[in-house]
Every structure is written in C-alpha cells, then in structure tokens.
Image 1: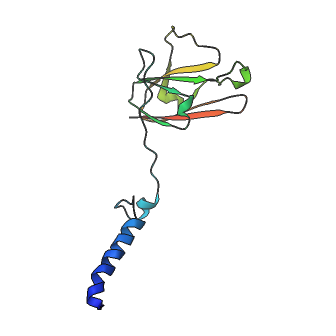
Image 2 (image 1 turned 90 degrees about the horizontal axis):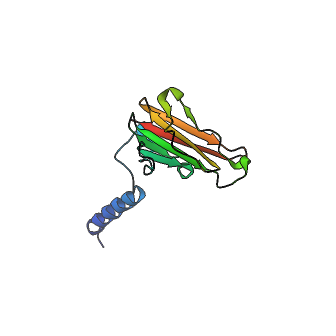
Image 3 (image 1 turned 90 degrees about the vertical axis):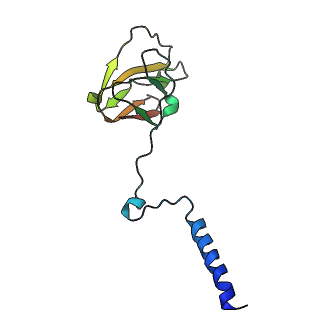
Length: 145
C-alpha cells in the first residue's frame, strides 16, 4: 500500500487516540486546569419544619449545602442509640457571626437527637460541626449566596 493511501487512516487513528485519552477534558489549559475548584454545593434536604427552608442530617456528613442569605436550615443529628456516649454534641458554626440560632419553642426532640435551627446572616461558607464522645465527627458546609 502506498504512503498516500495510509496517511488519512493514520491521522484519523491518531485523532481518535487523542480524544480517547482526553475524555472528560475541558478546554481549559494552563495552571487553572491543574487546580480543582471547590466542589459544587447542593440543595438541602426537604424542610420538615414549617419555618425552615431545608434540613440537614447525619447523612449530609461532608456535604456542601447551598442556601440563600436569610434562610433557616434545620439540622438534626440522630445518634441511633440510647447510650449517652453516642449522642452528638451541640452543633457549632464557624464563623458564628454568619448565622443566628433560632428557637421555635415547639420542637420536642427524641432521646439521642441533637438539633439546631440556623438562619444564615452573611454570604460565604459556614462550617457546621459536631462530634460524639465515642469518637464520631460530623461536618457540613453551608454555602450562603
């Protein structure tokens, strides 16, 4: 076979190999292409209290949750145990100036459930955290826009 006949096939094969090696690549090049952006945030779980915009639970460990400034989020952490060492400690928020703790006066929690009603007051990331005496930890980030 002649070189003129094989050249188009070689170019096509090379192009296919390059595309296969770059599946999922974006058009970005340079230093920005090498850094990973913050993971996207997602909507909170469905609101279970009427005055809230959503809910976070122990299943949201490590999550980035999108909320608008002024929204109230309910956080419920269930120990799934009657052993006090397995109970979640009070939920903390950093920076604490970016949230306002609420009390609705009507929620009675089951034994082993730790809760917080938090209204966002500033744009930015708010890190929520709790821990168990038995060694477990929980964190989530509210991404306030």
